[in-house]
Image (cartoon, rainbow, N blue to C red; front, side, top):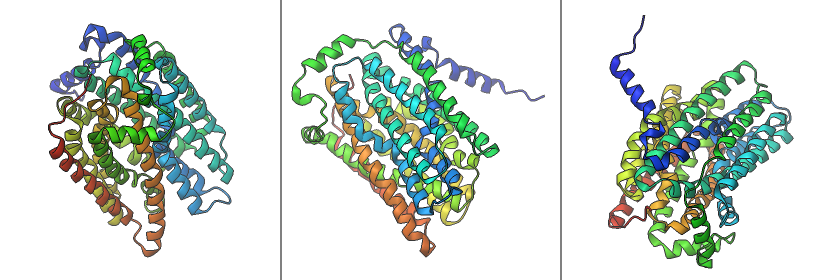
Length: 450
């Protein structure tokens, strides 16, 4: 009988024990325990509207639908892949509406709205109108979830000191990755057994989201009244605004942050260019099953994340986010290069291998995404800085997938569809080099980090 080596058992035990609230100072344990428990359930719901996952599902499910052309399906895939990022354009709205209000209650309501929209996907028919309805439901659900992400960073900042924040964020991201991976695998397996299983899958995902919401609503925000007072009594010009001019004013006032956002725009465009063509090529070139497609786009990357998160967490905990990005960006360069080579050489193995490198990149990105702006933002403007970050992500999220699919459709008749990944590689490479140059300029920049 096989026996696991003792050192592996010890490592596994230490890994599991590191998540226990006792691993943190006593004052952090209650909020952390409730929030961690909620993230066992919320990612199960999110798996249904992850851009890469729903793009694969839609491409396969609607390819056999009546009165649908390849172009209609492919551009719908681009919209679905872009949805998590396009939804970020609503970030300023959420920051403005929630300004001076209870963050936990507001987040809880948005989680419920997201769950209801996920459940409604079950009634979408596999027709042209159904494809439109799917896009509307997914984009709307992602808009609601953008509010959760925008406001959650303020909760983390007030509940967890900087010394513990990166580690805690890493644990949350690890749990999310594991649950997303498990759910993605189950979804792929179930849909391969019966392509119409989504009629039961999506209501089940929504129910898990509601369980997570019930737990999350018991989280307590430290200094909630103090935060409300600071937001309500702060300068009017520092308050989040529905007016896009507020974003440009902030970037004009904080030039280092503006430069950071500029290179994030370049790197992000390169990253976001690959998602929709990836789902399309998996079906059109490799004829992948539901499970193979979800393994490539979701399961493998998010399973790699827990392995890479501790490394990135330690790095981010001791360096400025600009320096962190100057190192972390190269994981995306490698992933995009492997994706291009796999498609160009018609090698499904190499194409799958890119998912491993992408998972390493996603691991660092999950941490820097939630915490990076803390190195620039004063405490009372935390949500505003995060809103700028995710709003700019929404802009590139709208441009990149649609441009990538248009480029792919243009290259395809020339037998060069795979070269859309080469263009993405060049853009990503420029972004990685840009962060290195920016860090040389800003290496003496102080961190707010409160």
